[in-house]
Length: 237
Image (cartoon, rainbow, N blue to C red; front, side, top):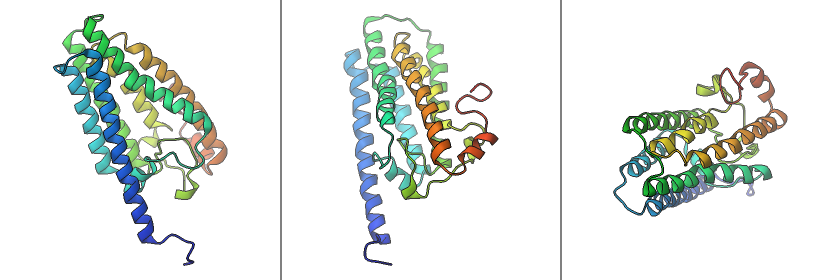
């Protein structure tokens, strides 16, 4: 091994540092979500808001238990080769769904714009759990489940067809499609559906662009796309 090549100890140290950065990022995101919810509603005794935060924390814990540490490190950074359009669409879709929709939901709860039966909120919470579970399954099945769109040549990027990838090519985005409209309903807000659905529009565009990128730049993806016909919604698209 030449002196220019990183040693296993150096790689392990880099992964530990990136994992720590990811932990800090998650804590900061959690704080942003909490502030978005409770500053907009103007009080702390909002059960639906706490329930959403609890589900979010549960998903983060489950993710940390099942994915590999090098994937945690990958998701902690804006990796080299990230597409410029993804920097815009990725940030826009995430902002509109969270914290955008959460702020609107908090204001809705505060001023009583929407009235929801409790059962609707409970059912919606079930869909949030379903979407979260699909997201965790996708990350557990795909060690290249990066937070940005890039070909991970530095990590030996290859096509993954295990788990949910045997049914749809972008199950992580499908998970967002399930959760994003369910979050406002779980929080009891019709108005919060507006930013959430706008975020989904950005996500659909991102899915199309990412799929095109993978077809052009990732060896074997074109054959995979022929076997798994649907990008986002099984039986539809």
